[in-house]
Length: 211
Image 1 (cartoon, one colour):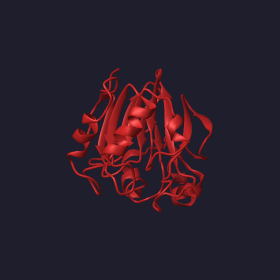
Image 2: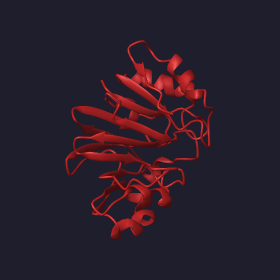
Image 3: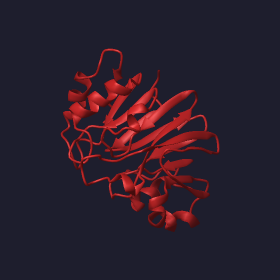
Image 4: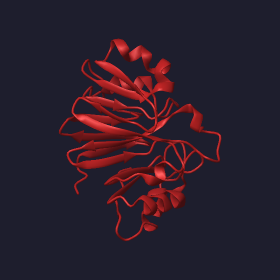
């Protein structure tokens, strides 16, 4: 399975080029403006996941923004700059243009940072026959433990999410073909967390380090 269509800018800022268009998740610390996003998925509105400055660098008039219903007020200023905004809730299936996706609850069962009642989301994006799971800021929970995917993007920096050991345990549980660690080496976590995560994966999972 090829990952050449995937770029991680920094942290959890992910770009995936698909047959249905260019998809961004949580654009953050974008360099030069590209304004090439056909779709932007937001997991929640913490500053390192919803950055208006970086949104401006990737959106265009035709962009579709997908965001949790609870973040609608934060994202509303972009309604005049893009094609449309789709507000979603966890645990549902949706389509947008040529994409289909599921929303997966993203929360910390035992931490205060990302409470379940906020309704924040991870996403399983189905494109070109591949199921991409972007977890959002989360720890293991009953809902995300059931996800089936081909490629998983899992935070590994600790404090607000899984640390590298917990992230590897989670990957070994859901068993994607490819696991890509995120959310480390910037703001939280060490730059070595990716290698530490990869070393703990079971042999049937291919680690790919993009940070």
